[in-house]
Length: 46
Image (cartoon, rainbow, N blue to C red; front, side):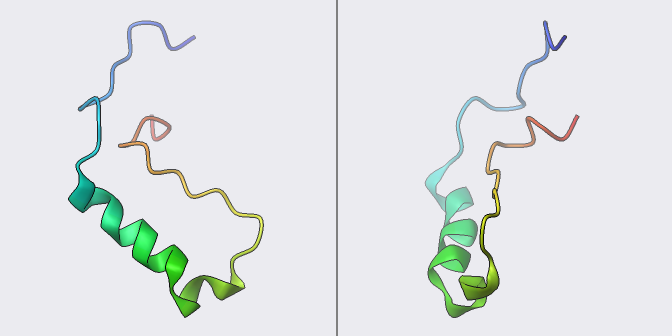
């Protein structure tokens, strides 16, 4: 189904992961339960 599709870049840089990690470690994320936060460089956004 997705044969031939490629990501824009193969791996994320450390700086790109800081935002989601800081959010998940903060009090703002205390209301989030059972959620999936995809940090995949847009692979599922096609």
